[in-house]
Amino acid sequence: MNNREIAYALTRITYGVIFLFYGIGKFMGGISNFVGSMNQQFSGKLPAAMVMPFAYFITGTGSPDRERKNLCIQSDNKITFVLDES
Image 1 (cartoon, one colour):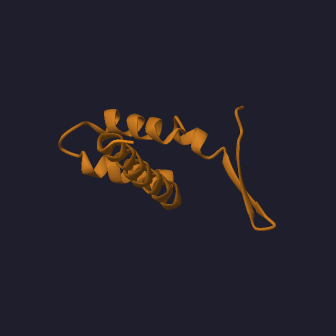
Image 2 (tube, helix red, strand yellow):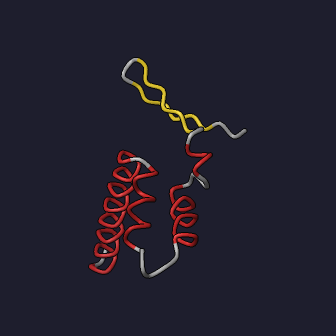
Image 3 (cartoon, helix red, strand yellow):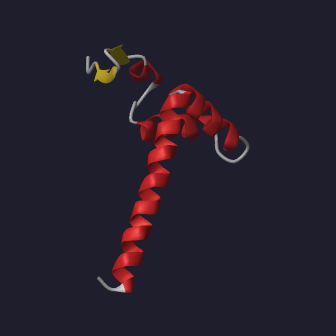
């Protein structure tokens, strides 16, 4: 491996870790809190009608109604995420 390939690999790993922890924090804080903070950050710059749907879209829930259908079941020290598609 030459220096360029090593630098590229380290950059990918670094960005991967950053995005991983950002995503974990987003879901641990709650999707509604994330959407509210995004709406607050963009207030005065973009209308809420544009920011909120985008914020729900990038979290993968799609809408506030669908967020409620994501269930977290914990048993025997295992956490399972279930998505009700109905």
